[in-house]
Image (tube, each protein chain N blue to C red):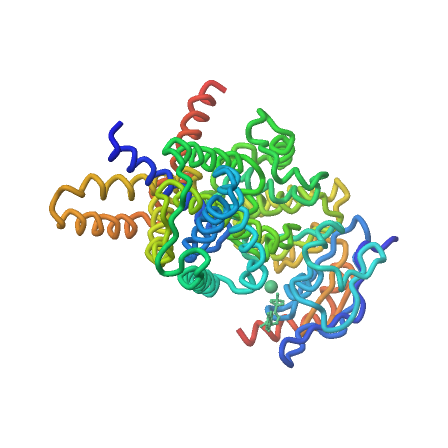
Length: 283
Length: 253
Ligand SMILES: Nc1ncnc2c1ncn2[C@@H]1O[C@H](COP(=O)(O)OP(=O)(O)O)[C@@H](O)[C@H]1O
Ligand SMILES: [Mg+2]
């Protein structure tokens, strides 16, 4: 496999991980516009642990995810007092603040960026992405996914049915941040260099777009969205700049025609129904 | 007769507006009670106070003798209080079964049940329990359909089954027959008959008097937040104040 192809696969893996970091809170009704901030926490924390403390990369990457999750847990209670657009603004602001802090934190290089000494192979990044997708898929076979949907759909009814709406919201935000933190930590150790500016608004916005394009109703939506957003622009790279404009236009038209995203529950349901009908004709 | 629910001197004000005023009534165990009154009388507010959507301004709500006014809303379903909503509030894009799973939540035994990947199990007990209730009410064929695509009358009854899956001792129904056609109303009636046979106590807000007469032993009439009459159907129907309350609103609308 050429270095170029490996690079694209790693990019796809990293984008996929970030997309699931956005997907989890979104499935509970929270639009997190500060996911890049949580990736930055994971990246810097893990890089510091390998650089300065001599941790092995796997432990440092796990710790990076845990650090992002702990921060999210700490801010979740005050943040989740807000809802809807105000919650999104709060996450947006948090992402900006985190990025600004790392920009001025000299112990990790400040504005000059932070070189990371330990390198991980592409296979590690891809394995980690596979693990994240598997875990989220496993979660989709539990009650938790249905409960997130209940909280998103109607928090009052969810509460009256006995669900702990606050705790579910905190869990969704925290687990999403942990996943994003792992993504950031992997990025740091694959590219061996991080700078605060990279973890900015664009990264957060693109990640949200992957999820919206792929669809939030199916657990595979973020994967498909990340794949399209990673592969199509690469395919267009060698062609004229106009192709990018056409891709952007395609996204706009697509979202207008199919606001629920590419993958929906309906798709899989139609198949089950077809099966059920063919099964019940002889009864 | 033992009282399942006992409401005493209940009041609720919304920014100076007294919506429920010094209301007292009892719901005996194993019976069906109707709560009627003109639009805006405060009936839905009474349900919201019982289920804890709003804090009470004053008064007490006793469930099996225990005052629950300070109990957080989330814990009230565990005390046996379940309800349906005036406008159906299911999750439209989820299947009927998935909606019903949420109703089972308070009956889970272990906290970690929430993280159990039960969809791997063929015929898991949770799915079986939900399907059993669906078939008891003749709705098996809708199990895997997204709720949003179902007819109104079926959705109303799915909403009821979701509430029943918590095994409530008191089920509160807010205008269950509203918007149903004649055959859907008959099906709802059968549905409630089954619940009565099981011993579930019902508290029903409803405008359809035939429906109330054939289901409820007792009627409580509200007007402007006050109880103006209480008793068996025929006694309440001939009450002068009740007639005036209803005729008054008819003239006004
Ligand atoms: N959350 C609220 N805030 C302010 N006023 C309310 C609220 N809920 C209900 N009300 C008012 O209380 C009165 C009774 O409403 P409601 O209980 O819904 O009546 P009903 O169910 O008998 O038709 C109405 O005047 C309504 O406007
Ligand atoms: Mg009402």
